[in-house]
Length: 335
Image 1 (spheres, rainbow, N blue to C red):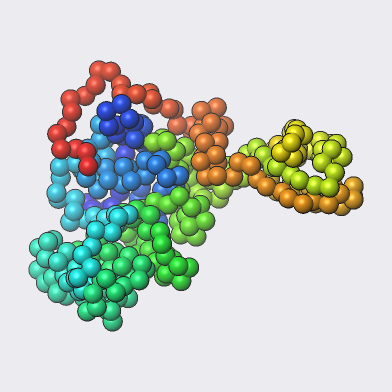
Image 2 (image 1 turned 45 degrees about the vertical axis):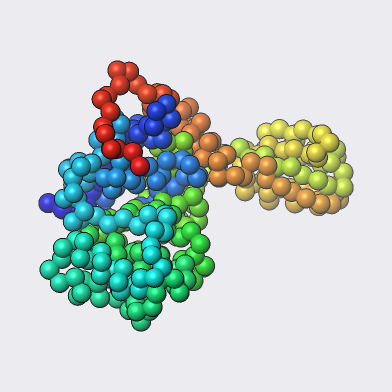
C-alpha cells in the first residue's frame, strides 16, 4: 500500500572520516513537514538518501517499508526538487515538463504535462523559454516536472531560495493544497519563519544530528526560552549594569571596552524590562545588539540541551567518527 510514509532508522552517512548524517531516526507521513537547520547541517544529504540518490552508510531509509537505495520503483511514487537549478534555459517550460512525463513512461505524457503545469499555474507561460522566467517561475516549473507523474511524496530542497515575498506565498499555497490532497510534503529550510508559515511538524537537524522534533510551536519555545547575550551601549553603562543585575530575567552582567554585556535567561521578559529600567534610571539606550542570534548558535543550544536531556525523548548522540567494525562500502553511493 502506497501511503507515502518515509522512515529513517538509525541512518548515518559519512564520506571518509567526515560524518554528514549521524544516527537519525524519524518518520515523515502525509502533510507538510519542515526540515530545519543551518547551512551544512546535513539536510540535503538526508533528502538525497530519502530519494535514493545516496545509500546510508549505516541504518535504513525506506518509503512505505521498501528501501529507497537501488530501488527504481520508488520513483513512481516520489518527486524531488533539488536546490540547484540544472535546467537548460533554451527549453520551454512545456518541453521540460513533457520530457519528465516521457521519462516516467506515462500513458499520455502530453495530458500529464498539461495537468502539472496547470497545478502550478504555469499554463500561460508554458511556451516561453525557461531563460526568460523569473526565479519563482523556474521553481514552479521544476515543481511541475516533479509532480507530472502524480507522486504521493514530494521532497523539496530549499524551495524558497531567491523568491520574492509574492512568489513565496504562491509556493506555500501550492504546497498546502497538495498536502490537503493527502500527499507527503517534506521541504528543507534554514529559516524558522518559513517553516512556521508552512508546516505543523518540524525536524531540526544540526551537524548531521536530529536535535529536536515536534510541533513548530514547541520548537519556537525551545529556541526562545534559552540564554541570550546582549551587548548594550548607553549613556551610563555602569549605572545601568547595577540596575539590570537586580532583574529576575538577568543571570549575569559584565562591563568592558566593548560595552555592557548582559546574559538574559528570558528574551521577552528582559527586553520589556530593559526599556522600563532605563527610563526609570533616566539612562539613554544608544544600542542594543543580540550577541548570539545566529542560527548556528540557536541550533547549537538545542543540541546542548538535547545532550543534557533538557528535551523530551532526547536523541542519543551517535559516535562522531565511523563506527567499528565498519560496514562494507557500497559502490556508487556518493554524489
